[in-house]
Image (cartoon, rainbow over all chains, first blue to last red; front, top):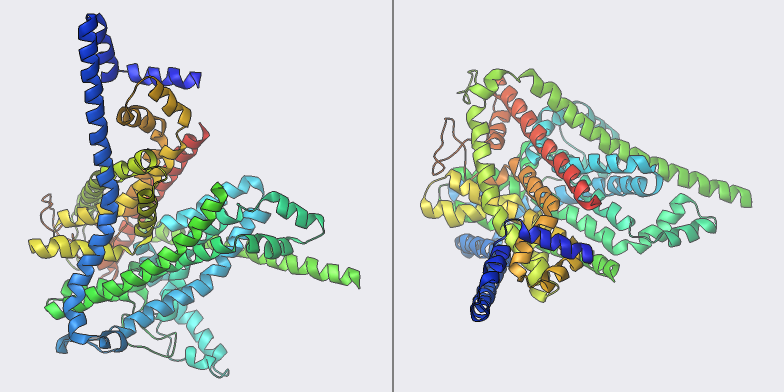
Length: 349
Length: 281
């Protein structure tokens, strides 16, 4: 406490106006002192309420941005939604020449790539988080954790160019032929993995998305794993549980809410990811039964076509796609935040 | 019987732990693979001309000077526009509105904005600015980037100010300091390392962003200091050049990708080091 008073006083006296005022008022008479003190207090009060209003409006601007985004999207999407009605959501036709637009192919592509990406990314992320919290020697935890987080910082365009020039050739020449051969004799699954190996396609996009969301899910998972009280784990080890049993029976049940939150956060990211997907998905407005076929996602459509769209109905349809994407990601991210907030609140208590 | 059960449990545990180790190697492997390819492909084209010449027409040789300059201008602009708003909002949440319902709502919305698809921000700025003005411009790009900066800065500012010891505030109050002066002169100073970390993270975040620039700043093949016109920028140039059939363009795209990645990684690592120092104090 005492140290802080000194520190505060020290910071104040460093050329602070406050200190100047205090010094200058020192030499005056009793009456002058009282009035100048009153005026200083008034100035303080005014400055204080002004600053409060300024910060409050900045805080409100965050809400205004979100509302602005929503309103402008609804406004821009209105002509298309009125023209096509519910049909917009259930038609796959996307024909700018005839002004006929349906969003189903893009919505389908967005959901399928994201869900596939989660199927690939979640086990890997959980694995990394288990390694970081249970197995890893102390001195390696920070460096490895940071390395994984750096993956999250790499811009998506980098994943895109890497996917296009490095990953796609590998997929086309190795992975896809192998998948096609492997699943050919298996009924049902051979439909999913049918067709010529183009390289580009839904599965490639899902792979790239998976690599991109692993760091996000890992970071959350690791953080929630670390909230497990060590007494709980020690008790489990004490009665002879193996590492896997501790993770499965103690750590995961204890952190279930947070895990779901982390997965939803990753899903939110995957749904809206644009550049990397645009490079590798093939941009075809079709729904194919094969995961190896080209497809498209909402964000890829917007990224590819928006700057060439001149017709008002075309623009409006693209904005309507944006609105759909915004609503889907908003819901997913909101659920994620609500779940994670529950964990944070519990921890605070 | 008992022994085999125990052995089976042990083996299962070892297998799963082995898999989790493999997952980690997989993750680190991808980081190494991506960085390795970037270095390999990018360094091949890293010549002085990259920094001294403009982006070339198809099939010709050239550099990335205008794109690098444009990226610097727009990132700087976006950060200078977005940081004050973010910091002030963070200050409100941590000081005046600590624990209030409004703060809870703003934090919730802010966290959603933090992960919201960046292409939506591009659409938003297109509608409120580009469509009104009637042309693409650097200003639109700056606004889009600023909107991306705000949530990052809000988050770190609030977190960092909440870490400032309450006794410091009590001491200041006891000496008759008004709250606004305490925040500006003492709270912000105590949290300085963390605040700088937040700004660096925001810079790292927006410097590689492409999607919000697609239909705001667009791009420009020529040198341009006028932010009221389309400005060239590295991410857009990478996007265009990588998808082109010309070898020279693709090479420049790789070199640009290497430059962006180095900048982003350097910023994030610096931010981390600063952040670690800030929390140790």
